[in-house]
Image (cartoon, rainbow, N blue to C red; front, side, top):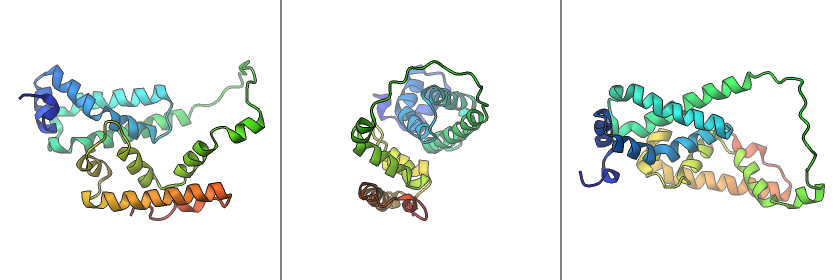
Length: 198
């Protein structure tokens, strides 16, 4: 094989099963951005996100002989990542805060600065959060670097490849409407409900 970067998922898995370290590296390079994008969707901090990512690759090592259809590897990784992220988030949410107080200096900017600084960015982030989980996941996957193919994204989200373009357009229209509503002060909580990604 001339280049592992041109290999199919199945070819890489076969080589990885045989202990080829280069194949493992190529698998990680190929899908690490997808795994990280999914992890970010669960609002984990960086340390928890790294733990989830490492666990996903460990699960692949443990289950590599059980993957019946190697070409569906992106979907397997996505499902494993979501399950592990949910598990970690559940553990984090059960942590009971203590009464310990930390002496942290109050270095908050003035109210005027807070209102002006990064206002547009805050509006976009807030509007994005009003979208359905399906829309948020799809838009994250479509903006990864390096970009994922439509085939890989369709496998991750469990939708026909032909539906991704129209669904993307609808999700972006919802996002634009939510941003406009926030800027105009009309509120946008209702825009994320219903069938955003259908």
